[in-house]
Length: 256
Image (tube, rainbow, N blue to C red; front, side, top):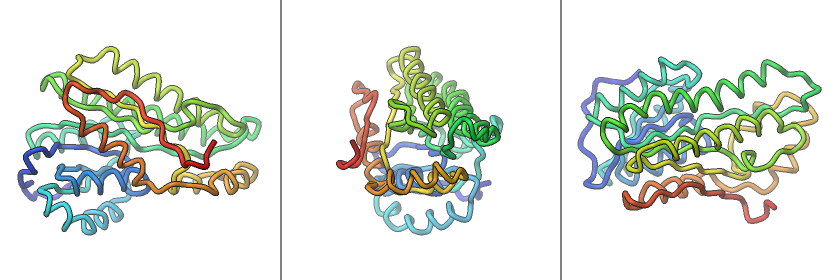
């Protein structure tokens, strides 16, 4: 839900950006960086208390740049909810320029653990959530003759490791869908996939399988800050309209 406050115009170069999964980790960092850079950012997530706190923390830097951060409750597994999220941004500003499909979960486990409910959750959030975002924004981008999709995938979209079969499956699919979208879209609609390596976040907190959780302790020993990914997103958005940054992989230097 959003307030009825009118949104002030952004800076001359500011865009209207919708970010999913913005209550923590990469999504939070992306929303904060872009609002501080003069964009009007609609930050979507289920945990609205965290979104409200984020809006308060970024208020001063956003105001200085002509940007703003606007919390919106969002469940990406609900197609109607995602459509309403995108429509909220469009209605309150007159357009939508960027959709950043960032929401994701990572409850890793071996397949023989048979944690089917967790498999379903990953498919619903990581894959259906992405598709819901595309379905919501693509008609607006097409009508405008411009727009930018950004998918936050993972290095798991490039490799598979034990306990990561389903997670990587969703990320391989997200990468494939995003590149298919790029090939099908009008060239005026830009499409970018960002694949982060180990980043400080809450992703590992969703792991319930003891073996997978133990393996993550060593794997995540060398993590980079979420703002490193936010910087990559900002770079892709800041390119001239005729430059489409298709894919970026960002890892900690120690992650091989």
